[in-house]
Image (tube, rainbow, N blue to C red; front, side, top):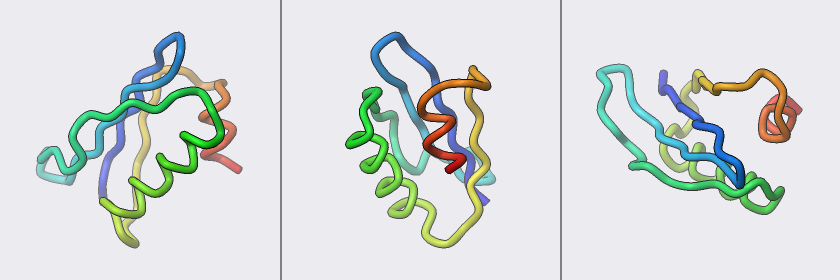
Length: 71
C-alpha cells in the first residue's frame, strides 16, 4: 500500500506519495485546480503506485479534487 497526502492551497495542492515504511517515493509536487492537472496527478499515481492500493489523506472533505478522485 502507498499513502498520498494532499495539502490544500488557494490555487492548487501540494502532493507527496510515500510507501509503508515512510519513504518518499514521489517527491513533493504541485497540482493546480484544473482538470488537466488532475489527469497528470492520476498519471503520477499510476507511475509511483503501479497496481497497489493508495490511501489518500486531504485536509478538506469537499473540494473539486475530492470529487475528481471519487468519481
